[in-house]
Length: 251
Image (cartoon, rainbow, N blue to C red; front, side):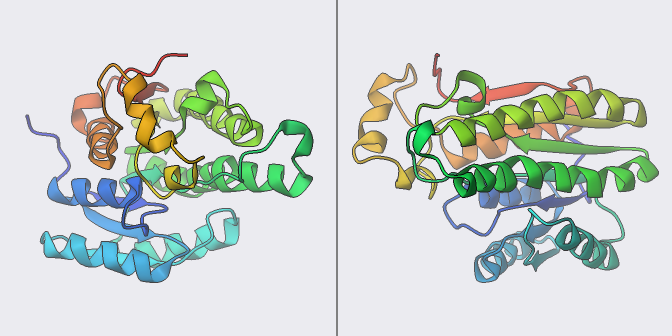
């Protein structure tokens, strides 16, 4: 099947971690013919990912930017457009979570962190890139949410609220963007052996697969495959949806 991704330009946030979803997404898109803008606060990590993209024969650039800040988005996009001239795909992957704790023990700074790094960053990216896509008369945006945003997260209420907000935000803006030929959707990953999961309570990563119908953790490649589908021509009729890729996790 022709996915229609050759020579498209994709911006992937939070793609500096060498074991995270963002890097896997960047490389999968590159394998399908995309040039990649790699964003992360960890510039060295972003450069490593960009170098792997270039080994696949595609153009790439690494940009350090704080996605919680609109001004950083403005400067990042200006730099990206100067090199590539367009942005066809945006993957709002950057995120994070404060250490798990009961809601009543969460300080305002914990709440602010969860909202800013997840929901506000997604809003900032969409607000910055959407006008470009409207001018180009087309584009694809994928926002990474979480099962916590669907089912709730015990001891991670701020994170769950932010991820739920991403879903509501995406569904709403997707309806506004669709008439312009722009598809906005979400991917909800299952538990994977990423840097995020490695901060989970001891034993979780080792024992969690036993509870899953599929019998294994979600891989970064599983998520990359889902993103590739959602940004491809094969998903042109999918608008404002959440694709859960979790090995059969139930509420």
